[in-house]
Amino acid sequence: MVNLARVLIPMLMQRYVEQMVEDIRKATWNVRPPRDIWYYADPLYDVELEDFSDLEKYFYGEEEPVSQITGIDAELLPPPDRLSENQKTLLTEELDNLLQVNHFKLLFPGKFPLNLRYAFIRKFWSETHVALSFGENEIEFCDYEKIFCPFPGYCDSCDEIEEEMRYDARWEEKTDFFEEGDDDIPF
Image (cartoon, rainbow, N blue to C red):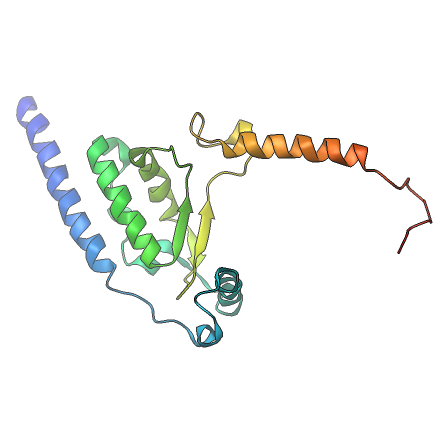
């Protein structure tokens, strides 16, 4: 009986993942039409797109669960410990594609393996955000403090930010032109 369970459970999970992939791909067909605000945007100008995305968040700022935005319930995403590495990789690719269709861009270090991203995506699925109809909503998982970095061994950004902060501090020490209370401001 125990040996049968060891064989059946992975087979059933594989079938579940295959069905989940089908549902995720179908959900990519449900694209929100651009809101009226986008009529005035120049899609070839990246900075303007970012500004309009922020405006859309402001004007239409009611947050919804990511599961509602995407059409895939968070409860349907299996826990990472129940999936094989290949299944986590497959679901990560499919879910990331669905998120991109819904104007979310998840920011991971380039070296961070796909199978490890699944746990972050699954957790993100339970959050609430403003649904965009165009542009990009960038989602960061790191606050760029090395001791709290969720990507140890994969993230270079924390080191780069830390070095920039040290450089800025040294630069401020060298260029402190005015003392506190100095009234000889040149403008």
